[in-house]
Image (cartoon, rainbow, N blue to C red; front, top):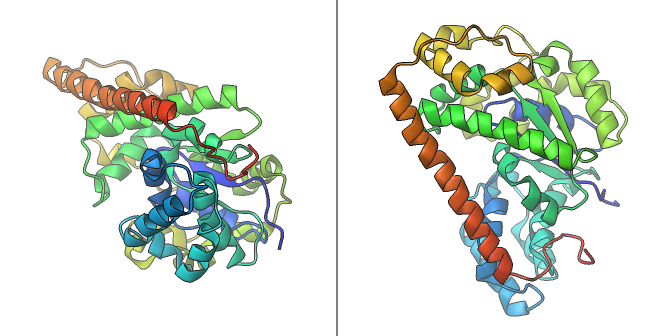
Length: 328
């Protein structure tokens, strides 16, 4: 089977509906996107440690690193053949080639030519993603920030504060706005609420963007949801095994306090308005709350800035090809 040269990536703030979209696309006869893993970004951050992958000893080192951490990076969730992966990895020449192999083998195991990945976190690293996969098609799922924050507060794996969650959502929206202007032919943005309320219309637009024919089977994603989600993740994805429902849209009204709503609407007013989420008038914010907000703001953007500086420094030292297409 000839694999596609336009991988698909789904990104967005956590709890924005990226999993539902992944499940929908997985029902397409030509598309297979795996459960979320952590290995790709971890490898990219450590690229300097592995060096030039044209050298056999460096390939051995990176293969050893991946296999030793396959539980931690959730690679085991894909249920791929380690022996087959190693055989292919031993012939890889770039970091993009190494990571693409995993996603490609997942698609081939399902007899589908279109491959890719879903991870919300990628919204922060679109430029790096395109260095690995220069011909990628990226879909940014946007959900009402208040519903995202409310949902994150319920997640057992989310250990961040409510203010961090607010900043995280706003940052995702801003990154998406930047990328859609720079990479408009490769970057698409959709609203979660539109996907829920008008699924066929939205899926037709997505298929057109991906240059794939629309298939009605995508609407029945819930019938196969359980087999496409690792068992330990099903408790927080239980709604995906049921038909689409709009009754959870706006649930923030019952789950967020008035102070939380007021702070988020003050913090991300511009972004909420841009995506047509109704907001009320600006309310008075308690000075003590504002102090907490600015402290976390400085920490949030300080860490992002530090990470960017480190990434630029590594770029200066790592001059080897990255693209999964070795000629690029």
